[in-house]
Image 1 (tube, helix red, strand yellow):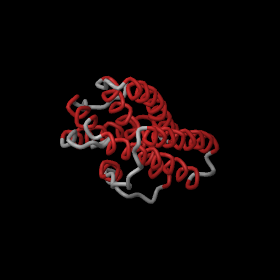
Image 2 (cartoon, rainbow, N blue to C red; image 1 turned 135 degrees about the vertical axis):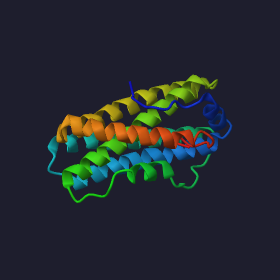
Image 3 (spheres, rainbow, N blue to C red; image 1 turned 90 degrees about the horizontal axis):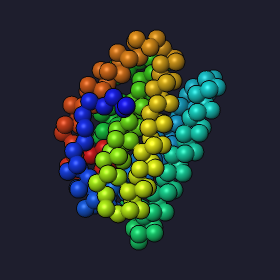
Image 4 (cartoon, rainbow, N blue to C red; image 1 turned 90 degrees about the vertical axis):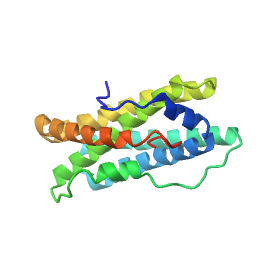
Length: 193
C-alpha cells in the first residue's frame, strides 16, 4: 500500500525497544516537525484553499500526537530530551534540485512529506508488531493508521497540482533514493534511524 521499496527489519524494533527514552524523544520531535511543516505549507501556499484546510487539520493532529507521546513519556517517568538532528528528512529534501518554480517547489515538498509519513507509518507498524508492551503496541498501531492517512493526503495533493505522470516519475525516483538511504539505517533508536 505504501509503495516503499525497502522493508524495515525487525532488528530495528529490538534496538528501539531497548532505548525507549531515545525513541520516544525522537518521535515527539518528529511530530512537532510534521506540524511545523503543515503550518509552513499554509503560510507559503495560502491561496490554495483546499490545501490550507487539509494542512490545518494535519497540523492540529500532529500536535495532538506530540502531546500524546509527551504524556506517555511523563506517565513512564521520562523527561522530553533535547531535539536531535534528523538527517533522514534533510537528505530527502536535498534529493530534488532547488527550483524557483512555485509549483515544482510545492510538489517537491508534498512528495517529501508523503514519504516521511509513509516511512513513519511503516516503522510504527514494525514497532507495534514486535512490542510486548500492550499499551505501546496499541499506541503505535493507532498512530500507524493516522500516518497512512497523512501519506495519502500529501500524495493526493501533489498529483492534483501537477500532471500525474510527471508527479509519479518524481515520486518513483524519490522512492528509489529513499530505499538506498534506508539500507544504511536500522541501527539507531530513532523513527527514521
